[in-house]
Image (cartoon, rainbow over all chains, first blue to last red; front, side, top):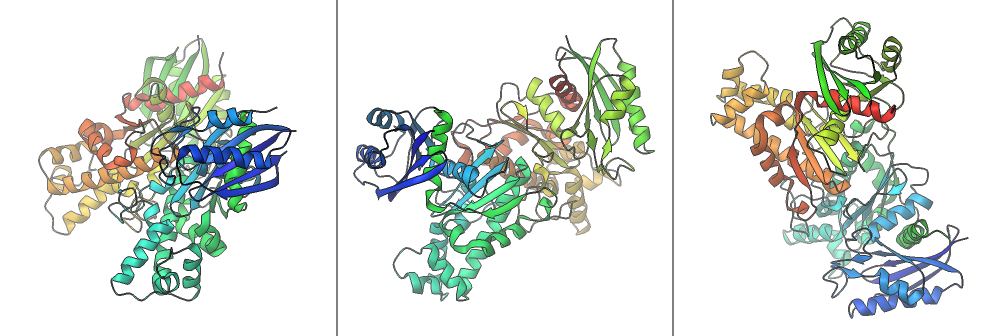
Length: 309
Length: 309
């Protein structure tokens, strides 16, 4: 029996799960402190202690930034205040909790969670695509998380339209500029400012245009919402199809807020957009199954792989 | 000491090398028979017998079509007359020569050759891109050829311009439609027919527009040649950059007739086109080194890996 805690460190919340023999037995949450890295590290330790079983074997942490494999450090993390450089997470957490601690990029950890216990189960070579505020991804090859030098799976910044829409990173035509919620919101407000009436702005008002806003406007037949989601479908289809072709994937899992909210009809359109070139490849494109806990679960499972009893 | 023969089965010629301890000791060639698969299989055996050392350990064959790993069969192969279905190559060649025979896709075999003894030496995760009549590729991950289910490395059919120029396969906007010699020739003749004067057609006349024709027209300042090569650069840069980002490659090797003919200045432009998003990734984009023998050499080395003494 291996007992592990997995923690997903997000920009707004920290979510921890207690995992025993591959099943989630308890969950704990708290808001992510805004006071900088030391407060965040304390919160990671505190949330683990809250779950704290007597037989804890190891801890896994998924964090929102680049992780160079084997260093235990993550950063810079633009979603975490003051986290402007690589910061060691594994050492202080392991020292405080007295068990070995594994650190992984959050998108990678969630991909591994879906592979082991979700929509990727049974697949050999899988890509997960997370359509959230931005677009992230994680690659599992030969049943193992594929890290490269720490940057693998970064599908949000593949070019889908050369010279196209500007991405938050400054590049042109990246997938994230078409299929990330924040970029879609920017584009919706731009079209609105150009004189297009749209339910997207009516519903959201001054507030953040959440995935549910896109879903509602789409269901109401809003033209701008239909255009933006259509452009997202084409972009995701092109990027996912290209990845599948290059690596010969057998499964692509699509999740994140927008992916979950738009659901199977969205996935069906992505399959069509990915194209005939994949006929006969055996590729399956499916929705994610685990939801919010995928990252924490995946981090726990990676820790168990690394530090088996 | 392992002695192997590697054979590259091409649409017009068969090239065989005798490899001893990783060095090419002899080369043999012949035209590819046009009379169908049995004649081709006989020619493979004959060219191996021509080189035939007393201590032959194994044979590797690279062939121009899809190879499902472990089956010894390749096909359909559109460049080989009558090769309209998967045909067993390994069994008859092994039976005739009395040594185990490994079969691999030709683009994959050449990628492995460059990885082991050419421009990919020392890299961990590499993509080779072959800019020939069409565009092929091969992926080496963790130092080993990555086959997937037999289709991996097919970068020629990734979409670089959604809805763009029609590819020979019928798809729209594929890399091969912009950077394959045959597609570039079709586009040059189309622009010429539309009234654009171009040295490309002047030099080639009715004959095939070879890579050297593109190089000459480009050197002479021809506008259509500059446009077509510029579009090829952008397409290769986008596709290669996307692949590097997704898998976190450390090296991309660019070869094939057009790659070799246009050389380092072309590679330098591809690096720029691949973009800033790869800064800091440690990726190197370099020209292929081995030339025509890469496929035969790679096939021999794959056979040695599979059937070590």
